[in-house]
Each structure stands twice: as structure tokens, then as C-alpha cells.
Image 1 (cartoon, one colour):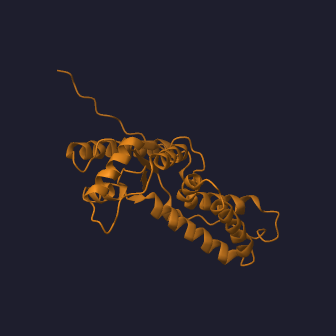
Image 2 (cartoon, rainbow, N blue to C red):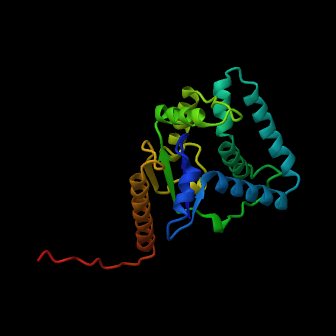
Image 3 (cartoon, one colour):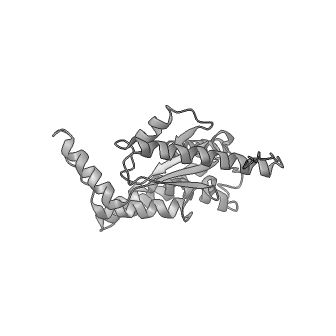
Length: 232
């Protein structure tokens, strides 16, 4: 399984819908969907292992959420809320791992959800300035009921930086995604208007899958002799 995510303006949902029309050897899942499933699994494990641990855990996050909401800088507050789901999952997992001495967590064990073990990450980046132009273009075409987009360039830049830190620099990245190979796609050219760009992305994704498969075979001690073509 591969995880896919992108910055604002990358239109990952539409890109994944196009990918699902192609024949690929691996399932590709949106990062938000994977994270929600992992968080639900972790909370279920917590509930099954120790009911007394739940109030303490969620009191910590309630206090953290209040602190974010009370921030004076609203733009930074929006940035924190945007990355809240990832921070929630990472902090919850870290809290449970490092609280072994606490009576509430002494009997707790994190069970792994083996069905959701990702093998790599696809990350599509769009420069903030280009993303803002796309949003403005979409807002101009949208109906009056939806209204214009209220996202600012500063907010888009903050999300762009947060995504780069997570997927490129491995900061605040879930444990399951750390040290995984990452395929970075250039989303500056709109794949919905330029079909060649979509098939260029598809080519690199298939190549990425082959590289992951070769790495796994080498780890298992499987060696496949490559066929060399004669020059004449």
C-alpha cells in the first residue's frame, strides 16, 4: 500500500480518482483516510486495554486544543488546526509508548494494524503562489452560493512548509511513515488540463513501485538476474 498526500492546490482526490482508473500493482490511499483509520484503531486498542487511561489521554488533548484556540494570532491558529489530526495521532502514540511507568498505562500495549502498513509515500507539491492562483480561478468560476476562497497566501505557505517538514524532513511524521521511500511529484503543471503531465506522474509512480519491490526482494535475499540486451 502507498500513501498519497499533497499541498494545497494539488487536488489529490481528483488525482487519486484518475489513478484508480489505471491498472496498478498496489493500493494507493489518501493520507487523511489512512490517518483516520489508524487513529480509530489506536483509540480502540486503548479502550480495550485500559478504560481508566481514556480520561487522562483526552484531557491532555482537550487542554492542548484549548491552548491552540486561545492563540492571538489567528493565521497561525489556522495552521495548527490544519495539522492537528497528524499531531493528535503522533502525540497520542508517543504518550502511550512513554507512559509505561504510569499506572493508567502499565498494562497497555499498542497492537499493530498490519493490514495498513504502507510501503511508500507519494507527495505532490504545488508552489504556494501557483496554488493561490488556482484557488482564485476556481473561486471565479464557482457559483455565488459557494462564495470566494478565504485562504491567504501566508496560510498556504505555512501548510506547504508543514507538509515539507513532515514528508521530506520526517518532522512530526507518524512512526509508520518514517524511513519510507518518498516519491515527490511536481504539481505545478495542472494534470487536469495537461494530460501528458498525468501520464508522466503515472510513469514515475510505476517506476517507484518497481523500486520498492526490488528493495523488498533484496531484503528477502531474492536476486533476479537482469537481462542485458546485445548492442549488435
